[in-house]
Image 1 (tube, one colour):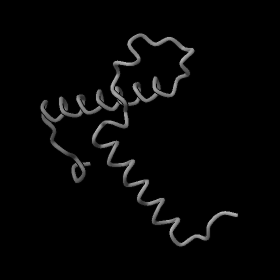
Image 2: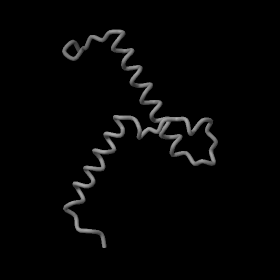
Image 3: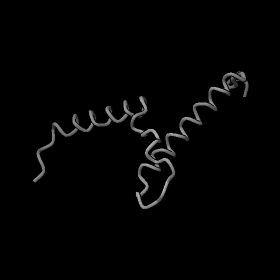
Length: 78
């Protein structure tokens, strides 16, 4: 157990909590974006889009680049 033990401080835990809150908020915003407009969500328009977050935007770009790279070698669909 001592071989894998790590020392954490209150600052480490506070940073982790902040990151978890940010992730929760991003997931929440994404769920609201995908929810049909018939479901009334107060201030839906004011919520930031999940795809506008820098880390998520980078992942989207990487995924799109990977798809393009993968599809370069494939014949066009019939």
